[in-house]
Structure formats: structure tokens, C-alpha cells
Amino acid sequence: MTSEAREPEPTRAGEGAEPDGPDGLTVGRTAALVGVSVKALHHWDAIGLVRPGGRTTAGYRVYSGEDVARIHRVLVYRELGLPLAEIGRILDDPHTDARDHLRRQRSQLVERISRLETMLRAVDRMMAAAQPGMRLTPQEQVDIFGDDWQPAWVEEAENRWGDTAQWAQYAERAAGMTPEDWKRVAATTEALNADLAAAQRAGVAPGSDAANALAERHRALLSTYFDCTHAMQACLGRTYVSDPGYTEYFDAVAPGLTVWLRDVLFANAEAHGVDPESARWE
Image 1 (cartoon, one colour):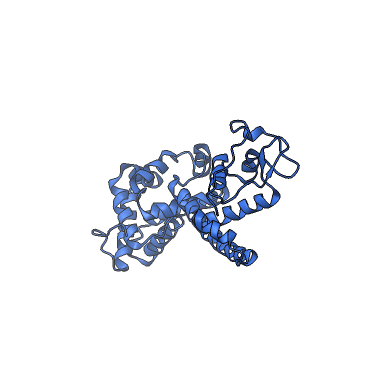
Image 2 (cartoon, rainbow, N blue to C red):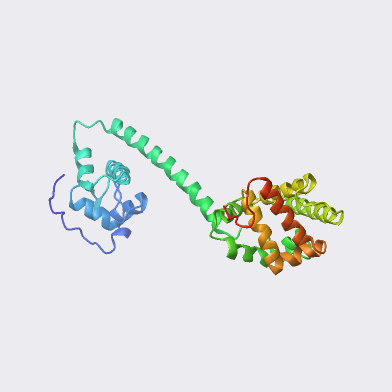
């Protein structure tokens, strides 16, 4: 490269509108074609990196097809992080096999694209996890889960557990569920509640095989949303009796169901080596 001063051009302000010559493009047209600024092309001209090699009949400097090809090579090397001075040395070295060098650079670009695509998928998952999770409208939620369903419960749950890994799991899984998926979940929930109420009325004792089987069905339903451990299930059992909203929900299914369900969950947790009173959300 050289550092010669560029010749003054007839005009600079309206250069993007100057007519192209028969053998090249003006700086404005070239900048638009390759996606860089006119200022960048002027700078590359000034440092001898890419100099327009032709002129129009009116004296305007223009870039030939070969000049534009050189600009594209500069852009490839710049994308790979090479400084302009090194790019100039590569382009001007008569011993450099340009095609072989570009093949190597292309291979690096393919690897970079692959890494970026992996990062993009990760960002997409993070964006999905940052959403409230349920992508149904409030009316769709009521239509699927029934008139007793309160759409505000989703926001309340996010306020309570939004900073946990389990909420991120729920949000990511819920984002991919269709209305038909939600209908199946609603049907499963309704069937479980009916069986819980029937077992309570029949006097099924917490800790019995029948009660433990219901507790595992309850945990499996929760695992639709996040990976629920027995310790987490015990924490939920405590929440059911301490939170008026949960108590009202379960006792509406059957009077006294909330306390009975808590006892069932506690007994099943103990059977799996978990102390329900001291269990933590983990």
C-alpha cells in the first residue's frame, strides 16, 4: 500500500448522484452496492487499500469491477478481525495465493456462522423463557380451563417463582405448547382432581399405596411444566394450605381437600427420604 494523497475530485457533496462511467461506478454507487459508507471508501482510498482506478469523461473517479472485487475481499478479511494494514499486505503480496487464502477464510466464516447460529438458538430459548409462558389469550385460558380459571394466576406465579430455574423451564415448555396441548393438560388436571376428591371422600389414608400413587400422578402433572422433585412437591403442599388462593381452589373441588392433599404429598415425600417440613425448593 501507499500513502499518496488523493487527487481532488470535481465535487464531493453530490458524489453519490454522479453519473457512472462506462467502465466503473462512482464512490456513492459503490458504497451502496457493497454496503459500506462513502467515508469508509474515502479512507481506504487515502491509505491505498482500495483506490478507484478509472475516471468518467467528466473527471469523476470510478471503481472498476476489479476494484469492487477487491473491496469484497477487504470486507471478508475485516469480518474475520484482521486490521486494515494486514489486509493490505495480504492483498498486495504477489506470492499470496488469493484463492487458497479465501478458501481458508471461507472455512473460518462457516465455523463462525455455525457458532453464531448456536448462540442465536440459545438466545431464542432465553427470550422464550423470559416470557410469562402461557401464550393463550385470557379468554382461551378460561375456555380451556373453565370459568373458575383466573388468568391472573399466571402473573402471580411468575411474581412468586419468576427468578427460579423451574419457571424458566415452564416458560420455555409452555411457549411451545398449542391450544390442543393445553386442552390435554386441562383434561388431565380435571381427571386428577376428580380422583383426589373421590379418594378423600372414600377415606384413603395418606401414606397408603393408593394415596402415594395419586401423589405421583400429581408430580407427573407438575412435571409437564418443570422437573418437579419430591422436595418441591412438599414445598407446594405447604403453599397449598398457607395461600388462600390455593386453598379456595382445592376446597372448591371438595371441602377439606387442601389439607388432605398436603398430607398425601407430605407422606409420599417422606417415603422418598424427604422431610416435608424442612424441604427446600430444589
